[in-house]
Image (cartoon, rainbow, N blue to C red):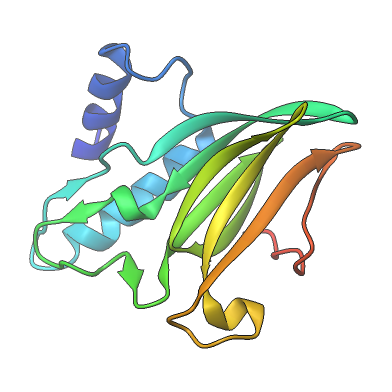
Length: 154
């Protein structure tokens, strides 16, 4: 097993996350670890990148995983996973991975709905890159809905 598998297994055995990491999330973490190790034998740390979340609306509920690449660290490349517009935020819903470039994320309760709010570079909203912009995602009738264009599946 590669070092990252042991790190993830140790993380899971510590009882911190309440779920087993999905194959899709493990693949994203493994690819990031490989990218790091290929740079002067860098040491990779996944941090708290994988989080289980619940999204819901009056039209249904779904449990999903977030793989937040802003949590990654590589000893040989300070900015390997993020750029000026943010870091990749991967959302795994029903075994499908969607990704956004994000400056952060937060779950927001709005009445009975639980919405995923994603911080975005202002350019995604018609402004300048340094301006503040947010995108909201909700689970409705078996799919993710947002006002922005749907991201392509990874």
